[in-house]
Image 1 (cartoon, rainbow, N blue to C red):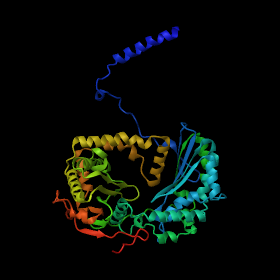
Image 2 (image 1 turned 135 degrees about the vertical axis):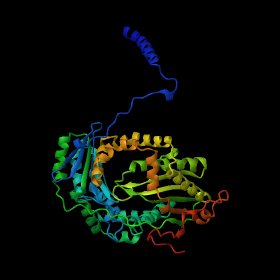
Image 3 (image 1 turned 90 degrees about the vertical axis):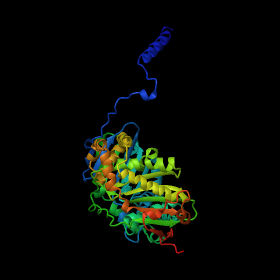
Image 4 (image 1 turned 45 degrees about the vertical axis):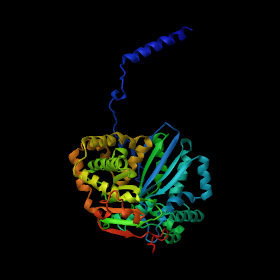
Length: 491
């Protein structure tokens, strides 16, 4: 009873203490201590396996799980001519087609028994084989991982199923205007014959055999191409020993994959339009080829793009085209800076057919304002704070941290990129934003891609008689491509 009688007295003391702290009467008057966060140091996390493979290892005891990711150089750019689609099929059947002494069903059963997730992915220029499982099953999981890495069986039945699925996906290539826009935009910006635009056709997929998958896998699955990221519930020393005895015992089977080919030339500036009469809105993208790291004004360019259309509802394009004019649900921009190949600069939106030209003219107007240095101090400060305050998300867990470092080493991005990132963003001022926009966004090189009902789009709106796509340059009508052959459909 005596202890219970103390509770009301303690509550009174707590209330009095809180009252004496002078709580602000308005939320905006609240103050918070400054965020103190530093980019993690990769040096203590990095090790090298006996065969020379770099590995980033981080203990994380929060959950009884282990994640192992073997990243590799190489991808779709290595596809032989006439075998377009082999990278996609390897990506699927590498995992589903069995491995070593386990057929496809047996491998599935082993992984299910361990409640393990093992996935394979082959991208455009890099890929990964990833394992996630309970820490207690690590030895069994690593054994399965090594079987999949070294000796995939590429089961014929699973290969045929993957080919059927890929062809089924290809049949839907013209269903969405967005897919057509991306496909034609890539051809115009990177070049018709660039490897990125050599897409699978029914003929190329039908001609792919198991032997093609084996040969393609052999190029990728070479320790000379690997960087590894590991995080989870383990002791670092023990994990390195396990990796050394398994992955580290695998000798390189040849040199690294060749470097990624670079684009040569884009199409001529102007308007390129694809007729799709079954939609009542037009999709429009306006842009040109972007850049590849390193570039000295990357941070200023990031801020400039963020102000133009990269930051959602606070961006100029969203406010002017969506909120003020009501011409689109969304309007965005991106300036791509790639590690392997140049990215793409584009400003894009989807609008009613009659108002596409008006929205395009507004986009061009906003680009002009950005290049003229009309970004305000508030615009710039808001954007800079966003970049600085969201950087920790890239390192928000032990797993993301080691994956970030492994990916950087894979593509050759220096750690100094991150350690100096916030300072470089903080140093961006109005002059830097203007200079970057003026130098890097080139109105005379703009390629406009339109997909929609062209008769209605080019007719325009009587409310905006001065809005016309002809002001962007000559107009070229592109034929819609057959989804299975990618050849122009004759009208």
